[in-house]
Image (tube, rainbow, N blue to C red; front, side):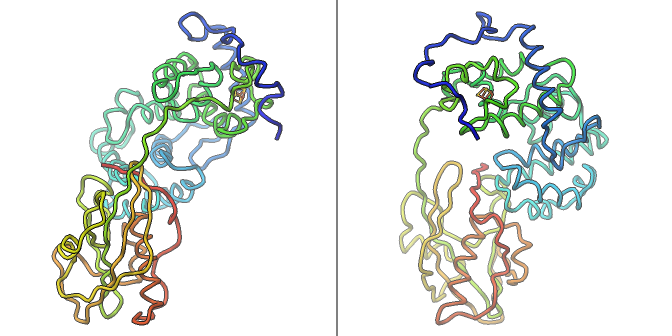
Length: 408
Ligand code: SF4
């Protein structure tokens, strides 16, 4: 595709603010109408077909809109598609989801990361069923009272599902507006200004289409790199494009470097190959998910005493598994060494833990980091001189490289 602008950047950076900006920085009514009409006209011709999106002229299903918006937070459209379809197949309505077992929901969510969202998803479905008769409320203010629904999601659901004039501002929308209005202030400090600009652009009619049009514009035309300005409906009055600085915006404040935490994880198998798993505490990072036992994850490599204290059973002949499992969360990197051990049949019971047969691992609510640990350790266990030779690790290969968020 052609570069973002045919103009040279160097000669244009000094240009003034866009012509439609009033002293307060917001577009005037005429320009707002004109921009809105061009955006909707573009959307009518180029809208993306997405599994959760209503066909033109059809009313959006609030359940689908809400479910997709929760799933799409920090996750790509391509990743979400199969998860969305599977959730709809298993729980076609919000009432079905409300009646579902939380463990089933967490298992179905595994791989999407940010597990607090899955727990809140279930809590929200229960609240809609219990407090609203199974119908989502149709205003931003009421939606914001539901579990897991913040400002962005409330605005997105209100606009898309109910055509309320609400401004949903995600990263795509921030990028588009920072460029159109040439907002030089870096994120996150620029957020209030960008929200005000977004709010000023919302039309009285077709607010839902306007919202989705902005999402599509950011995802397909005004992309982070090499935006395709020549195809953009807002190119005629885009300040960044006029100045040739579109790829420099939005500016971002330098991020603090992520610390690295370290720990030791224990792969303990019984004589049949079943793996010892435990459930993490309900609150905090990866709350309620399953894991292999491990030491605390701290800034230093755990010493022998800490490893001994964290081992799930005493007297096991632990063997180090060669290599390190690395994973990145939102706020830190994690490096885990793995120790493998085996107990003969009958396997002893371990307080707070369960023995899970190899074939049952896939169905467990295991976060991606734990799937990495298991794949790494079970592969070494099967291949090593003392390996049990059990074929396969019982884990599908999906999502193994995906980052997960700290959801504390
Ligand atoms: S809003 Fe349109 S014209 Fe402006 S930078 Fe983005 S793609 Fe280019």
